[in-house]
Length: 60
Image (cartoon, rainbow, N blue to C red; front, top):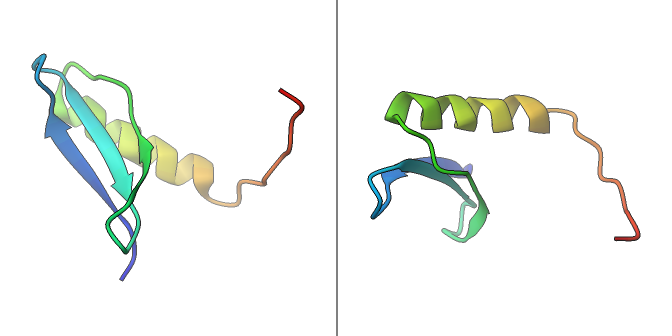
């Protein structure tokens, strides 16, 4: 089973997303969004950015 994005409303009434791996562990979280639609767009942005992304090591 592939990982999944979960979109949810936080205690402050903002919408956030978290990316969970197939074993249920959270591997990424998103910032606070004003609307559920904006949070879903955030999920799509992560999907698009991750496609073919390279791993780069930095010193800091």
